[in-house]
Image (cartoon, rainbow, N blue to C red; front, side, top):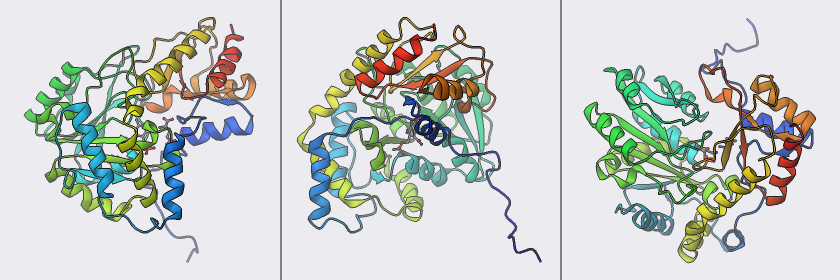
Length: 386
Ligand code: PMP
Ligand code: GLN
């Protein structure tokens, strides 16, 4: 008998995520890190101070399953304020350890072996594995460059009797495209006709630029009635390392969500929740200021890159900016980001990792949730490439 246990991988084609790889490469080569999406500045002091207070004043034991009541109330108030959608904080909100866990739980609450789940490439990396681990079949449709919009006719054609779920992400990582009201109407029509459940990944809800509104599924009551809408406090409050988010769903969907969540994470860290609840209650202006805060960074980065050989269509949302580099290099995008990191000193994310079958294109993704000086220094290096 061999001493090595038999273990057949459930995700044999999956390696370490590109975000970890590129951040490590950036650190190893002391490159400016515009790869993984996280700020190089801290969350608001009024938020981090509350966390310090709660950890030193006896708020360090398990929170309730759905999250602490004041945070769920703050979420419900915010959903009402931004999307004119009234929800019951007790039955329609669950606080989670990040949006990633919420996506996993929503998928596992719904998807059974053989169920088909529609998603759109370029796709955020955790969707496909979550579906496959549930025994589901990911169906990858394409968002065509440079607009990266959903082709609803292609969605209709892809529906089969096994289609159970559709996963949308707006604002969209990595392209920065956003859904509009027409998109929501098309989504609603298809979802109702085929009785689909929707996962709406809206972690960048407050990062929508150029005066556009964010078209949350929560703005459409009939769409909200069949959706898990998923959000991340990490993005909104500049604290990605806190790994906290939440899911909003109608009671019938939320009941199933909680059945899974209680055995994946059980609950979310308690003092973080109290700090977030306080900050949301006392600083509502933070959310109002976010679009301007990030649009200014986007514009600063675009202006600083104007003299470079990278071609960029301004990102409509998120803190990511795609850049087409065929005038700069003939390398494929994996080798391009390696070269950029090791030789040029700026780390980026290759676009091909977001595709099941990568198209023959030359795009990398830069992250602009960085100090102005960081963005200027990176752009100066990239402009030297001509
Ligand atoms: N969805 C998208 C589109 C993201 O970009 C991210 C995070 N980077 C997540 C989900 C996960 O968010 P969290 O860190 O809260 O798990
Ligand atoms: N979502 C972030 C990005 O796209 C990274 C999060 C992660 O590393 N999993 O860069």
